[in-house]
Amino acid sequence: MALGEMVGIIGHQWRQPLTSLSIMLEELQVRYHSGELEGATVDDLVGRAQGIIGQLDQTVEDFTRFLYPQSEPGLFQVAEATRMAVNLIEPALVRAGVRVNLAVAPDLSVRGFRNELSQVLLSLLQNVAEAFPSGAHDRQVSIEACRAEQQVRITVSDNAGGIPDAVLPHLFEPYFTTKAAGTGIGLRLAKLLVDRSLGGSISAANGPLGAEFVISLPLATGD
Ligand SMILES: Nc1ncnc2c1ncn2[C@@H]1O[C@H](COP(=O)(O)OP(=O)(O)OP(=O)(O)O)[C@@H](O)[C@H]1O
Ligand SMILES: [Mg+2]
Image (cartoon, rainbow, N blue to C red):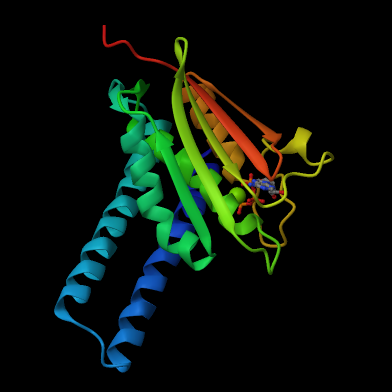
């Protein structure tokens, strides 16, 4: 992979977390000016912001490692990777009015780098935050993970109306986008990480209410 593409990917993965930071700063300002800013709120917001900044920092390291692999992947829990991604993007989802439903089974162990699965989920959730037509009510995204024989199956589904049939075959192509300001990097990155690094597969389809992305990963048994 070219270095230029990697820089594009890092920029892409920084976009929503930066939005989250911006939302938190605004909240701080609004609360201060309305006189309802308490020490505990400041501590909470600053703590969460520092967490996000730490993750941004880590993103650069992660993708550098992807480009120049050195260390061996270990085992990680799907639930942890999910929690990291949701934490990172939650303020942006809240602002977009999207409720997150999590149903991730415990003890789903996978071999690879935890942050890579996190980046995949972040790309999918970024898209969900952007997928709803204006005025859409009851916006929801569900992240489910369970064991399916020797695989872990992770499903990310939304109720934003789905993907047009003409778009479906092109989703994972690099630089394919239907958005005015899109780069088409998100799903290309997701597929790259899932196929090449995590040894699994990713597919997209339409469910009854919206898009449904399914990630299958080999279940790690620990030996
Ligand atoms: N949850 C979804 N619902 C409906 N369409 C989707 C959804 N996720 C992705 N798409 C479609 O897939 C296309 C490609 O997504 P991808 O994340 O690769 O690029 P993008 O979101 O357009 O641009 P970028 O990720 O650079 O902002 C989108 O332009 C959109 O048309
Ligand atoms: Mg995207």
